[in-house]
Length: 301
Length: 266
Image (cartoon, rainbow over all chains, first blue to last red; front, side, top):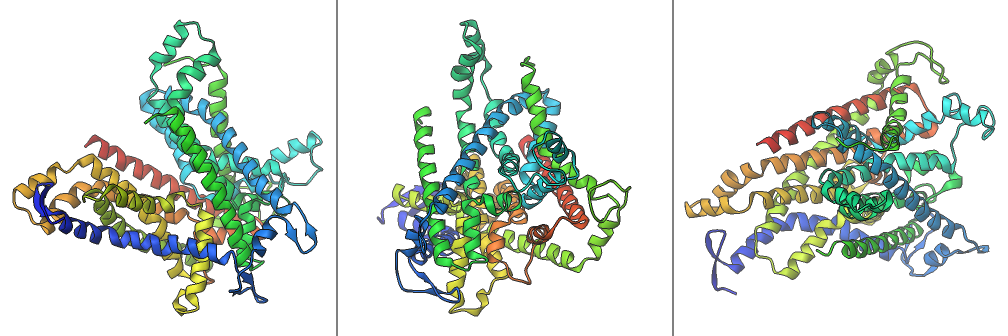
């Protein structure tokens, strides 16, 4: 270990270097360990504890919280929590898919603009990306209000009675979710579309490929890196989202994020909240796993 | 220029309208002279005037800025040295991948799970140390935790881009450790550090979930304030506040774009 080596022009030993590297990396690493890794482990422990009469944690260990999550409550089995879990995955899936479908035309449209104005169009996607989530959710609340055109049109079509807003509804949740996550898919996709090799598309055209085959064989594979970043940035946060369903979905359209927030807020049931958080974490890991597997299949790097 | 089917521009413009119509609506109603309802009653700036007379809002704005500034400064320092520590030392493959996983933890953990874990951790810490009451300190700690890894990732990208040639040259010219760090590495890393700090600052300003789980009654930030008011009902002051926040976002985005473009030219 103590043999000398030259490292970036310095004659030194491995041991000295590693000690110095440790001093550099330690504050950040310890910070993340202390305030993220350890709290997460604590969350696992707490999910096996019991809620005391005043909302405090009682350190008697049971599987009660997980049984409850699986639907075994005081009044026999119910599918309520399963429905919430399923709904979260369902909403996240469709949100991601709709965002992808909208992002392709959007990115091709912008990439096709002359270089001078392209930057302006791109900024139009970056601004919503950085706009506060609460403000964007609330903006939809405003647009769907009963006096405004959208609700009036819906009323004229006989979809809702006069004077009612279009929220809370699953429709409103989807509008809010897609609007929130569209920039998260469009921006990474754009970086792929900008670098697209059009010679491949022309070659496909020369070989009489139909439009769909051109897309599937000449365009899609080139945009996979961008799309896969976009999916990760959308699907995972969408499952845990709680501001949008809170504003636009109401109590009837709860997602897993609302369930967690409820346990830490009004219900003051931290052990159960911890169990639900773990369920979300598991869903996330499963999602990331599929994502990585798919990414590897397409891109053998 | 390529010609597309008419559906492409139509969908693209439709998607942009979809992003901007709600924000425009908020801006329009922020200058509407009507306390209740959403009918147009003429132009006014009185909601903006009211905003600046509202002490709760001013306090929330102050809290938001304090939180973002303190956490960004700490996270930038820790994140920068973390990036150097990871990138410039001969870690074995195994320990490097462990360090790397730890670095990415804040990026891949769902925000709400991280927030819940922090709430529980502070709840337990509170049993021993009373300073961990919900409030500004807890929020600062929470924000630093996710900011550190974003700063470190941005700075690390810069470290890889500049390569270690300059450091080797400096060593050959007998620079010692302190001189190397201060006069060679930090100036070269500056764009990465500034970029990382700007990212961290914006993440903190925008954060809702982590703040929501760690805030106390005296440490309300603007997003928390807007959330609380909206749950009680939509008001013209909130239109005005949101429009101002939106304007700040637009300015920040333009500044950071200008900054990155200048960097790219250099």
